[in-house]
Amino acid sequence: MADEKNFVLDANQELGEIVIAPEVIEVVIGIAASKVEGVYRMQGNFANNVTEFLGRSTYGKGVYLTMDETGIKVDIYTYMKYGVSVPKVAMDIQNRVKQQVLFMTDVELAEVNIHIVAVIPEKTEQLDLDDFFENDEEENE
Image (cartoon, rainbow, N blue to C red; front, side, top):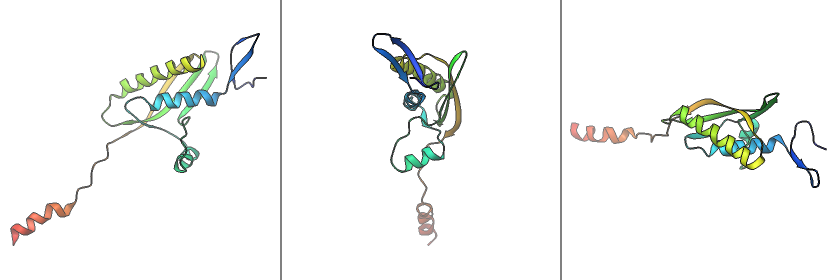
């Protein structure tokens, strides 16, 4: 018997029912969102960060599902790379997430809300100050 929190797809009465746990949909959404160009990473909580530190990937992080009378709503919390068009990347995430969830689970999402937590700049090389002052010392002698 399906739990209230699980999603039951239209079942073929002869074969039985298909039940999908919300965690499965969260993982599908997390993978689809993280693969969009311009996404740095998804936001996680402390438990997700510890799990990743230990070497395991957590794909459902930063994804929260809610269900009401209008349907399933998704809130995605993500970090963006510096220099990308935030509205374009957010719309790409919305489109990819809706398509992947529909394709993989046959579940239609009512809303896909994107929350940009931060913009992460590219790492720059640390300048070696000795390189700058070597030539000055030689010129002064």
